[in-house]
Image (tube, rainbow, N blue to C red; front, side, top):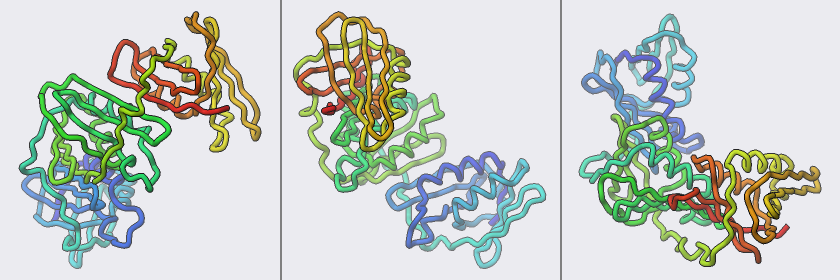
Length: 366
């Protein structure tokens, strides 16, 4: 087995596997990527048994074969060597020579026998979705996914397609983020599924730098994403997602129009003195003013004031400052609406004039 490949292409290909390969595992093969040749390309495969990545890259193939090598070490080697073309050659006893310019590495590999099989993309009913749509919807929900391993159903993003409307929902029990997108050319339905947090992160990487479309489909308990010769397979969470609609406020609140950057800077000034024990910000709204304050006995106090257009009744409520920052930062527009309620009702961050995003944040007693 031997091939020559552009250093930049090989580096990018191995880098995309680093979020998937296992850092700590009792099975050393899961630290490795499988590299095999075929025709005028090489195929790089990585898996942790729950997520699988298969990506093809153009290369000059000198000899056919396949081998697995440590992903992180391979990435570090390619990153540090200098030159335009990398020569990769499998030797006897599964050792590998990697050379570029005058630099040469010789590392041990592992035979492919024990490498887990990654399900292919055959017989999958794919549908096209713009990369920009997937990227924006993930950005508006990913931050709210729970990290509590005891609540498996909340450890991912709920995804569904109904009559051409894409829906993503995430919650950790303290906040609930909902993103909708109706600009889907192909009309198709997908029953609700739960894509695990790690898998959503890998999907975001796949669509992050793309302006064209990505293909998505569901097969045998897996969400499959395909783009530019790369296939990502993510095993779904087998659980029932909570009825998120029950959390949505039924009574109307009071909408306050805010400049996104202005309120973000003010909230970040409040967050300077916050920590895990004291993370609250008190927001007081009076005539044409919003006053923000935060108190942390371990650090001190902070207060800020911004001008707003408001002539309603006085409101005062406390929220987790990080939750507000996450919810507002996810909006791409320049203005947002903060819907406040008294009597310790939830706050809601929305896009202005649209119904494609809302984040419900439970209040704090400060």
